[in-house]
Length: 113
Image 1: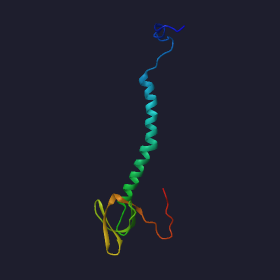
Image 2 (image 1 turned 30 degrees about the vertical axis):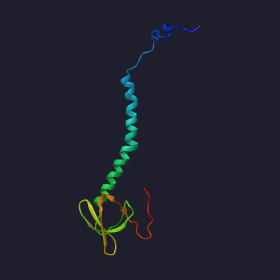
Image 3 (image 1 turned 180 degrees about the vertical axis):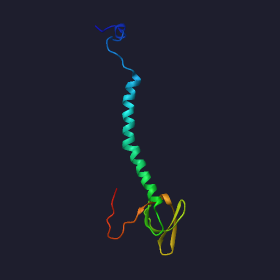
């Protein structure tokens, strides 16, 4: 026969100690936060810092490539704008943050990071 409902809803078994649920939750959350920090947040901040340093080091006459793939030579640098010469007597304004990197020199292999 089937056990009665009263038997199934009986008392909890005694003997085992119930740990602090807050403490056990912290033991799970803290390692997850550390993993996210070292695998996601820290590398992105390093990369952003490297890009900011690169943008600060730009100077007139540098051959650069933009994020959209436009190759040009820096003619003038303002606070947030770079004027590129993409062909003879053809100049465009580009946001400084959109400069992706320097053009590889002739005979130089481009390195992918």
